[in-house]
Length: 157
View: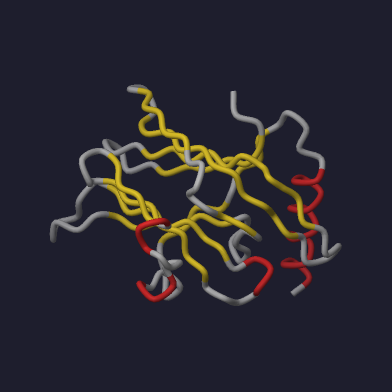
């Protein structure tokens, strides 16, 4: 419990003092929270595909905790032995999603050296101070060749 509080406090300090730095976000394997019924309605507005459908992102609302309930779902190559894509969830910390996450103004680019670059605005809530910061740019990088998925929060170069 103390470790979680320290993590949340550190997250808040990092986010509230962002300035021109980027802060790594939590990228984890999908778990029981990555359910179809957690995709925010309408699906058409909260899900996008890229790379001829090989990469899909979707906004999840897992409802609990309410102030940090939004997560980004990323499904992408490489394929496993059964032909399924990998699945990742991106949040502000391992046990915290974002206060707000939409795909309304998503910006997409491609860099042959790193992969697909996705930028959009999020808000981050600190449970300790009850402060919410945002909008802040979330950059997600998806490398279809290696399977690497990364995310940073802050100014995008």
